[in-house]
Length: 77
Image (tube, rainbow, N blue to C red; front, side, top):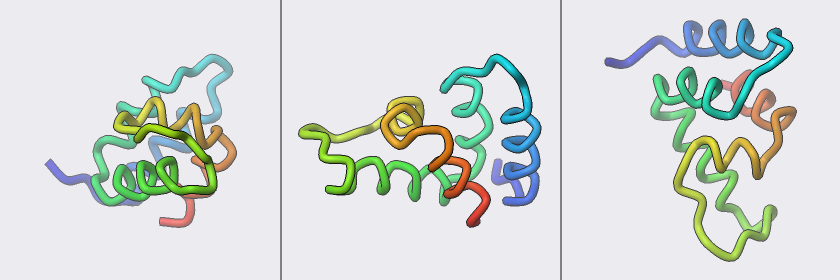
């Protein structure tokens, strides 16, 4: 099921307000928007982050990119 981007962004915003959150929590929201997943993985696998192997999971991408940069990617949608 595809969710409108605004719904995903709203859920992400609400989640980011919580005090204790994990990469898995964000993954549950981000996975609803395949374009966002693609952009996140593409960013994590870019030469800018210099990882020798490829990043294949959303959680790993969040850890590599950092939450502040993930927020920028989500809100840029």
